Structure formats: structure tokens, C-alpha cells
Image (cartoon, rainbow, N blue to C red; front, side, top):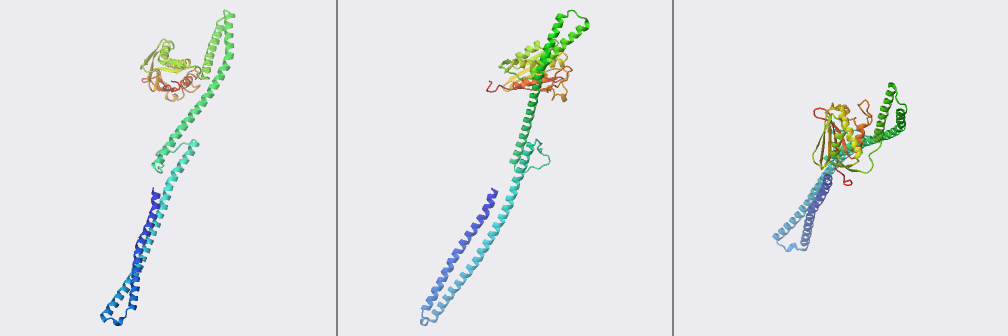
Length: 395
């Protein structure tokens, strides 16, 4: 709009000057031509009149008339010359004003161009930073905002885009790392199972064929049985972690599942207190993987409380999905370890494999769920699981 105004003003001034000149000069030129015609006709009349037959008074009147006509013609010529100079002056003034306005327009256009190009160059530089995965300048970081408010909106959009891309890259890296972990776990489980089967068969044959043995041999056999059991459990955990839940899905009542695990999956010294709000509590999923995941969480809670105490379990369902919390009252998990407890092969137990919570997260994410760790009021750890409402395809 400003550039249009700057362009239109000189044009309007030039047209106005031309119109003013035409309106001023045309009437004066016509008046001068009429005066000259009158003067010419007066001279012709004077030449044709016989002044000898006129009285002195008539001759004086005729001479006075001729003088008046000549004076009128002279004044008309002078007025025409004055108007020409006046009009030329106005034209010069208009040209100067137009030149000044044009000069101002060029300066304003240059300023506006710089105001547009600098923020655009800045935003282009930001795209290069995003491509190189470098941090963008923060708000209020000492750099003044440039350009119109729309550019600030673009900056904010680029910041959000950079955050989204960084989160997507992190998720992709985490998914790639989990895929590598699953492949390793699958191969390890496969390599363990073959010799483990032979070891278990050999121990059973020793039990059947050797008969009564001395105390040292019995201890060795018991160690072999315990270690083969531990290796079998380890191979099973590796195999479970190495594959995603598959097969047909079914309706699972989470409250019923947790109630059954609270009766059969915890020691006698632990009480599981289940609370449900009466809302939706069924989930379409794979029963066995979900049962193993919740059993793992309850087992960890029991171990944290050393087999004594109460575990508070809540199931809350509404239009936003289903939320499950499992809260123990043990010593809790230190804040510096909370971000790592779901990593594969990370454990704080002497005999742990580090796959339990990793397998829990993998199973929940396969059911579009999320899991988070918090502190139980009064001490302990609380695992919060959220399942979103079913999608239209699965509803």
C-alpha cells in the first residue's frame, strides 16, 4: 500500500500541474487573440474613415479609442507572458515535488525491502540449523525481533517444527535401538535353548540313574538344577523381548485381570487393593503379553517392599481412555535412575536381566499405551499406564 501511494503521488501531481496549466493558458490565449482582432479591426476602421470630415472632438474620441485598444492589447500580452512564467514556475515546483516524492519512495522501498529480506534471510538460516540438527536461537536470547509480527509467528512455527523433528528423530533412534536389542535377544534366546535342553536332560538322567549320592554330589546337582532354571527363565525373557505381541486380539477386562493377579501373583504377605471407578475397563489386545506385563509390575512392587505391605491398584476409565496405576510403598526409585529403568539390560538387581520393565514398555506400546514412573505419596514408586480410546478401525 505504501509503495502504491508513493508511486501514485508523483503521477497525480504531474497530471494536476498539466490540468492547471491548460486551464490557465487556454483562456488567456483566447483573450489575447480577441484583443488583437479588435485592435486590427480598429486600425482598418481608422484607415477607412476620412478624418478630414470629422470634427475635432470626434477625432480626439477616435484617437482615444485606438489608444485604449492598443493599451488593452499590450496588457493582454504582458498578462500572457506573466502567466507563462507563472505556469512554468508551477510546473517546475510540481516536478521538484515529484522528484522529492520519488526519492522518498525509493528510500522507503529500500527500507521495506531490507525489512523483508533480513527476516527472510534469518528464517532461511534457521532452516539450515534445523537441517544440521543445531539449536535455534531462543526467545529473548539477546536478538531483537525483526520484521512484522507475522515473521515472529513463522519463527515460533519453525521452533515447534524443530522440536517436533527432534522428538521424531529421538523416537526413531529409540525404535532402531530397540529393534537391535530385540534381534540380539532373539538370537541369544535361540543360542541358549539348545544347550539348555541338553543340560536339563542330563540333570534328569543323573537323578534317575545315579541313585543315592553323597552330600557334595547332591549339592552339585541342585546347583545345576537351579542354574538351568535360571537360564531357562533368562531364555524365556529374551525370547519374549525378541518378539512383539502377535496373533488374534480379544476383549480384556483390565480390572478382572488385575484382580486375578492380585490373588495369585503376589506373596501371602502382600495385599493388593484394587479400586475401579465403574467406567470403561475393557481393552482389545493380546491377553498373555498384557498379563505378563502387569504380573511383572506387581512382582517388582512386591520385591521393592520385601514381600510385606500393600499395593494400591486403580483402574479409571472414561472417554479419554483407560488409566491404570500401580503404587507400592517401598523405598522408591532414585530420580537419577527413573529415566533409565525402561532401558533394555538396565537393572539394579543382583540377579536381574534388565529386560523386565523394557518388556513391559514394549508390550504396552504395542497396545498403543504409555507408561510413566512417579513417586508414591509417603514413599514408594507409582507406575501410571494410559491406554487411549480405541481407534475407529479397531472399535
